Length: 104
Image (cartoon, rainbow, N blue to C red):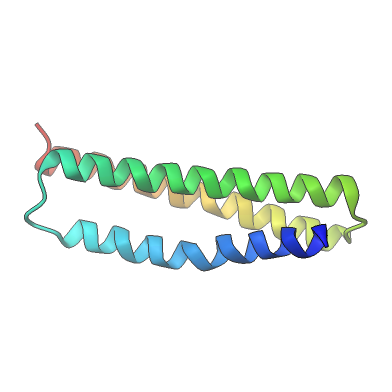
């Protein structure tokens, strides 16, 4: 049962990343948002990505601790988690660009 829940959590993370990328694209194109709303939006995105990374680490830790997971699967999950880090850095860079363009 716990394994099914852990796999469902990983699926949930995988399914929510594309909509976040779309929302970031929409934020980039928006012309009428105040700087405060842009700042809040970027903060929410960064918090989401960090939460996804933490969730992936927690699920991977669960698998390593309680389930005999093949090493290849551990590598795959680890690469997925590591793959979220550049996404978070991209959002941070995009935030700096928006700050120069729209910020105070």
